[in-house]
Each structure stands twice: as C-alpha cells, then as structure tokens.
Image (cartoon, rainbow, N blue to C red; front, side, top):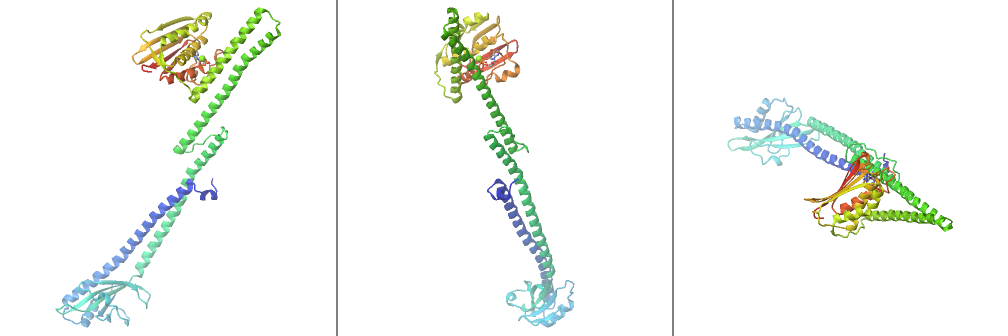
Length: 471
Ligand SMILES: Nc1ncnc2c1ncn2[C@@H]1O[C@H](COP(=O)(O)OP(=O)(O)O)[C@@H](O)[C@H]1O
Ligand SMILES: [Mg+2]
C-alpha cells in the first residue's frame, strides 16, 4: 500500500482521515462538555437541593413556633431535635459569624464569613462550596436566617455543612470514564477512517497505474474492479477504453497491411508489363493488352487513393459540401448508365422504378452520386452472374426513400453490424478496401439522412437510403 511519506502528502487518504478525525473530535468535545456540565449540575445540584430544603424547613419551623426564644435557647432546641441521619453538621451561627452551637464533636474557633449572608431574608438561603483548611475536606454549606420576635429581626443563622468528597469522587470517576471512552472512540474512528480512505485510495492508485501503462502503450493490463461503485465504474470505463484502443489499433494495422497489399498487387503488374513493353519483344496484340492492364491497374490505384483521401477528410471533418438542387432520379439513372456495360457483361437483370413525384432534393450532387455508386457497386460486385438488381426511388410524406436490392451472396448476420464501419470488408474475394459504405454513411449523415441494410446470407441484400423532406 502506501508508505509513510505518501501519507503525509496532500492525498485523498490524508484528507478523508483528517476530516473524519476532526469531525469526530469536535463531536466528542461537545459531548464531553455537555456531559461534564450535566453530571456536575445533577450531582452537586441534588446535594444542594437536599441540604437547602432541610435547612430552610428547620429554620422556618423554629422561626414560627419558637418565635420569642433567644438565639441560644432556640439553637439548643434545634440541636436537640436534629437527627443526624444525613451526616450533615448543624451549626447555629450568630450575627457576627461566631459558631455558638454545633452538632460536631469539636469546637469551632474560626468565624463564619457572614458578609455574603447578611442580605438574606427569612426563608431564603445561601450556599457555599469550598475546602475546609483543617480537614482538607470539600464542603457544601447552606445558611438560612433565624429570627426572633415580631420584628423579624435576624439574630443568627442556621447552617448545615456536609462533606461532598464522595460526590466529587463519583463525578470525577464518571468524567474520567467518559474521557477514556471518548479517546477510545477517537482512536477507533481514526483506524476506521484510515481503512476507509485506504479502500478508496488503493483502487484509485491502481487505476492510475493502469492508465499510465495504457499511456505507455501497454494494453495487456486490465483495471481491476473491486466494488460496484463509482471507482468500479471508472475501472469498467478504462477497460472499455483500452479495448476500444486495442480494436482501433488492430483495425489500423489490418488496414495498413491490406492497403499495402492492395497497392502492391497493381504496382507489381504495372511494373511487370512496363518491363515487358520496354523490351519491345512482344506482338502488337500483346502490347495493347499490356497497356490495357497498366491503364486498368493505375485506375484502380487512383480510386483507392481517392477513397483514402476522402476518408481522411471525413475523419478530420475537413469536408466541403456544395449544397444545390439535385434531381435525384436523374442522378440514379446516370449511375445505372455508368454500370450498364458491367451489368451486361455479368448478365445481371436490372429493374428500376423511379417515382416521378420526386422533383428536386437539396444536396451535394457529387457526394450523393458517390453514395449511390458505392451501394450499386456493392450490389454489382457481390451478385453472381445471372442475378438480379432492383433500384427504386419513392416519394414519401416526410422525405425520399431509395432502395437498392440484389440477389447476391448476402452478408452473414454476424458481419451486419460491422459493414458500415471504416475499413471493414467481408471475407468475399470481391471485397474492396472496406471504405465504401463507411464513406457513404458519413455523406448520408451530412445530408441528415439514414441508411438501413437488410441482408440474408446466400439470398441477397437490401439497402435503403432515406433523406428527410427538407434537406
Ligand atoms: N450488396 C452487398 N452484398 C453482399 N455483401 C455486401 C454488400 N454490400 C456490402 N457488403 C459487405 O460489406 C463490406 C463492406 O462494404 P464496403 O464498405 O462497400 O467495402 P468494399 O466494397 O470495399 O468491400 C463488403 O466487403 C461486403 O462484405
Ligand atoms: Mg463497396
């Protein structure tokens, strides 16, 4: 996987891990703060509640029923009736802060700070939390006024003091446990984040590696698909792309070799005849035959080169179309006329029906002618002697339809999808360089038209070309 140096880099892995860590950390921090505040409020609040309820209710009771007794005798009675079940020390403090009476077994020498309780009215209380120097204990104290006589004069205070060491211990324990749990969650989430980012980063690294290989021309390596997610989809796309590149590569290689072959054959015969002719040792008839062959073969070469040039123009989009009014029926008639002798030589039966309702179409007449020459030439090439070829044009409500049908060798169904692909040629010995139909298709598309091919092996082929009404 990745090295330590890699991890520190600004990688997706680091970013994912860091973001998850930060989010979890912040959530835990908030949770921890709320928890600590809550726990403290709950435990200390409850202790204070119990203590203050008690102090206020005792003070209220004695303020009411022993109204005219002085502080000392009142205090003594309070102490006598005080049940120490909740381990709080009861003190009676005078207005100066001196502890007059205490339920504890020792004497209080220091004064209580009364500054903060001086403003209290009967029934109110004041609480204090702190450490007592002598025992080191943490204490909670609640003071509430004691009154004497009708004038509600505050003469002293009733004070309940309780150790809260136990509560503090519980609170500390809870907080410690929660902090420990938070750290545990943080560590776990870090591990999970690292695993998660690993599971994202690793396939991406693999894809980078594969892409780099493809860029270097090594197509034998395939992208591995781990999960059915976006990265898996990317792996599929890369594999698809590799296959397409492979296909087009092999197509190109096939094409180059077939073109080389295509060019070599006529060149060989041209050269052979040129040599023979230059020696001048042959009869006049043989000489004419030689010249004929040289002419025929150079024509073939020219056609091939023209088709190649055309094709490369289509490929790069550098094609100029000259749109004008075209008489489609006349154009088809011209092509058929051009093939008349060839048809006769092969003893082919020709039928044609041209719909007179078709007036003019708008297009590039040379390019349209090229289309019909290609299709009719195929029908001618792939139909055996004595076969039949029918050509018809038809005026349609939404355009024009031209059908070219032959009773030739047909196209095997598995080849059907490929015939309009560039450089695709069938296995027949009559097949040319495989550019005719692909160039025709490009031209038809530039005229916003469509081409459909139907064929049955051994029976024949039907090619339908449609152009929209307003092209
Ligand atoms: N009318 C047809 N009958 C039988 N096969 C055909 C016909 N038209 C096209 N094909 C098949 O489609 C292939 C591609 O056609 P095309 O692009 O014109 O190339 P080419 O004519 O140079 O072979 C042909 O090689 C042939 O196998
Ligand atoms: Mg052809």
